[in-house]
Length: 136
Image 1 (cartoon, rainbow, N blue to C red):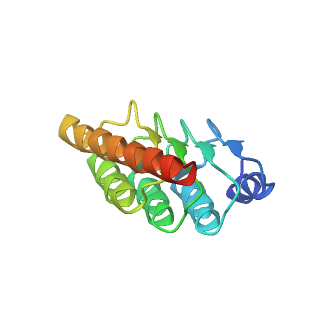
Image 2 (cartoon, rainbow, N blue to C red; image 1 turned 90 degrees about the horizontal axis):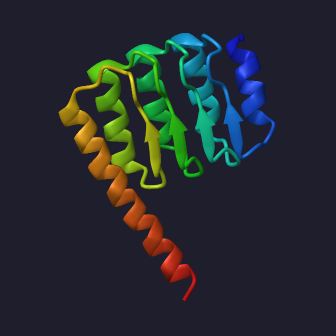
Image 3 (cartoon, rainbow, N blue to C red; image 1 turned 90 degrees about the vertical axis):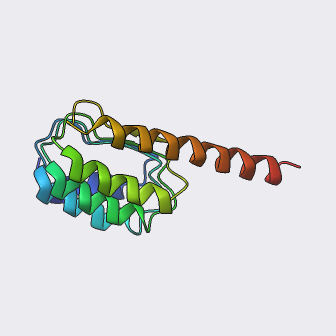
């Protein structure tokens, strides 16, 4: 799949977008990231197995800093490595909407994964607080 096709699927307005195993690479991740910066419909994005590497993770992390809609991001098997894991950790510290971040099989150090897990737990607490306050 070409990056432009992937962006069009994201623009369709679906809450769940499946873009796994399309060999999008870093270039595709960068194109998706640009769209995510302003996308207000996608809450669950699947991008497993796209060989995006740490450059793709960095681009997505930058987009997460601006996106307030996405809650679930699946990036398994993308060869993100420690640099990609650290980029995503920094992003979810700023974006507390992210509740699930699938990072299995990316060769990310266990300490970075532990920090990501802790941050996701904090994000869930913030989400639960929002729901409780809104539902008074």
